[in-house]
Amino acid sequence: MTTSINPPHVAEQPFMCPDVSRIRVVVTGATGFVGRRLCRRIVEGGGRVTALVRPQSDRRVLDGRPVDVAVVDLLTGSGGAEAVPGADVVVRLAASVRAASRAEFRLANTVSTGVLAGVLASSDVPPRLVVCSSLAAAGPAPAPGRVRREEDRAGPVSWYGAGKLAGEQAARRFAGQAPTVMVRPPVVYGPLDVTFVPSLAVPARTA
Ligand SMILES: NC(=O)c1ccc[n+]([C@@H]2O[C@H](COP(=O)([O-])OP(=O)(O)OC[C@H]3O[C@@H](n4cnc5c(N)ncnc54)[C@H](OP(=O)(O)O)[C@@H]3O)[C@@H](O)[C@H]2O)c1
Image (cartoon, rainbow, N blue to C red; front, side, top):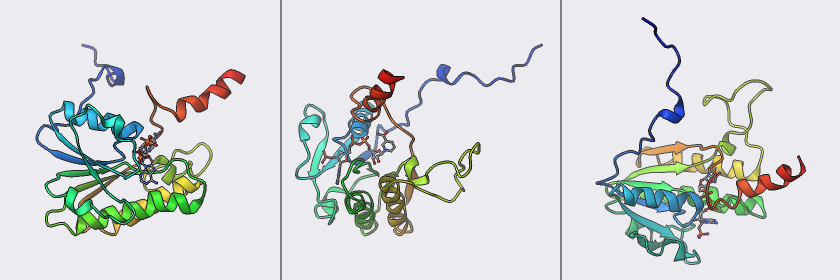
């Protein structure tokens, strides 16, 4: 008898999407690259989506999708308390990935995360908050040749990363009232990506 010690190849495993068929998910950043796909996945899985958008958001990208839309001021939380009741999960995706100053990053990625967490914490039945942070909040590996571990002290090296880390901390202050999960995804890329893949074009041309 032979026993394989190799785990099955990752690509052979089917993508497992959690059962969202009976839940209502509120999504900030629904008009963005990740948010549009997340909304589609939830709707395809039978869940309900409410997209929280800014007054200036281009809502045309949500046209034709069966999602409810609520206009919210993410910096003050105005409109949030009306949109959230009945939600099971709130996914905080809205963020500025490009800004001209540290202050702009702070407003978009730190202040508004804390404001949203505060709105949820003061609701009667707080939904679960999922804060989409970034690997940039953690920063690079602490030493050459050593992988970064979750317990390593965060050391962001960009304004963006610092703002995301402070956003995690802002949300954590309300985690006693609103159950909160933080995720730090690495680069996300794919069709309609206007950030990462185009940034590879120049090095690819000159390599
Ligand atoms: N893409 C990646 O590689 C990657 C990797 C790790 C983590 N993330 C995180 O994943 C989330 C989504 O990223 P993405 O790539 O989908 O970004 P994106 O395409 O730039 O979308 C950003 C979303 O946030 C909203 N937004 C932008 N600036 C805002 C501001 N100042 N205040 C409030 N809302 C604002 C945008 O809404 P409008 O329509 O109103 O502009 C849009 O819906 C972000 O939290 C990002 O930090 C992304």
